[in-house]
Each structure stands twice: as C-alpha cells, then as structure tokens.
Image (cartoon, rainbow, N blue to C red; front, side, top):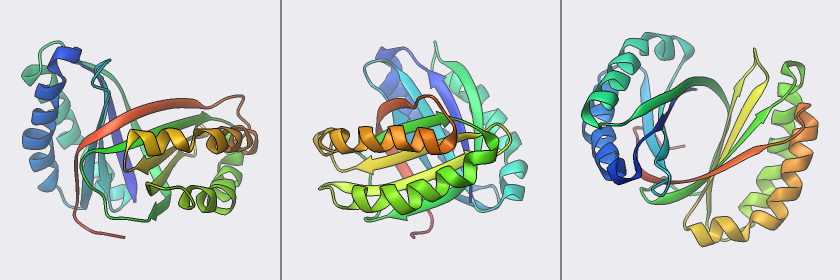
Length: 206
C-alpha cells in the first residue's frame, strides 16, 4: 500500500470549510481512480494546519492518481480562500496495525523521522518489534501506520487514539520510544504533530 499526503495551511476560521471540501470534493474524486483504498483528513483546528491523505493499493495506482491529486490541490485553493499548499509527500506503507475499525473524530499523533536511507528497514523492525506491543497496552489505542520514503530516509509513524486524553496518557512511555526509534533510524530527533481526524473513509478493513 502507498500514501499520498498533501500538507496544507488554512486560515483557522476556514477549517470547517476545508473539512467540507475534503469530504464532498476530494474523496469523491479519489474514489473514481483505480486502486483507491481510502482517505483521511488530519486537521488542527486552532492553527489551520492539515494533511489530506489518500491510500492506494499499489505504487502504480499511486502514480496513476497524480492527476487526481493535482486537481484536488487546485480545488482546495479555489474552494477554501487563503489555503496554501505546503508540500506533497509520498510513502510506502510498511506497517499497518489496526486494533479497532477507523472512525471519524479520532486523534492522531504524527511522528516524522528524517534519518539515514540505509537504516529505514532497521527503523521499521524497531517499530514493529518494540513499539507496537507497548501501544496496544494503552487504553484508547486504535491503530498505527508507518510509511517510508526509502530514497531520502524519511519515516512517518502515525498512531491513532479514541480521544486526545488517551493520546496524551501515552506520552510518557512513547517519548522514550521516540528517542530509541530516532537512534534506530540514524536521526537526531523526531518531529511530533497532533491532529484530529474529522473525515475518513476506507474501502477495506484490515
């Protein structure tokens, strides 16, 4: 599976409009493309920062969807005044752990690790063997997705929780694991972002 992520910056007062646009414009367009697996919008209502994510069954489907992505980005800027496209990222999914089915309103902690391309596999093994069992032990844990860009050595690990309180309750132990994961990946630090997932859709359940 592969991920296409578009980072956007929207005026905070326009976040609800951006959510509606993703739900009623972006997702329906993506559904029409072969290999579409699902989509989720991550939003920070206070800052207006967000990530629109689509999931694709294969690398070929991801590549074939590029025109859909271009059209969606154009519509984002047109339909939600003040929206800026920050960047576009693509990842191979190497871990998908789902304790419960996805649901709108979850909270997501996004950990970005910019490390050594030669250590991507080592970082993946660390998350799979050392991190998942710890996460599963916490109340409110729902899922983990890890995506990697092997060429530049970047890994993104997203953990999903029932509530913001559940997410925050895991911080103490997770902060230790973050440092160890950064070391495994050959990185100095891990960027952490917290989002709500007001919109999501998946065609298949794992």
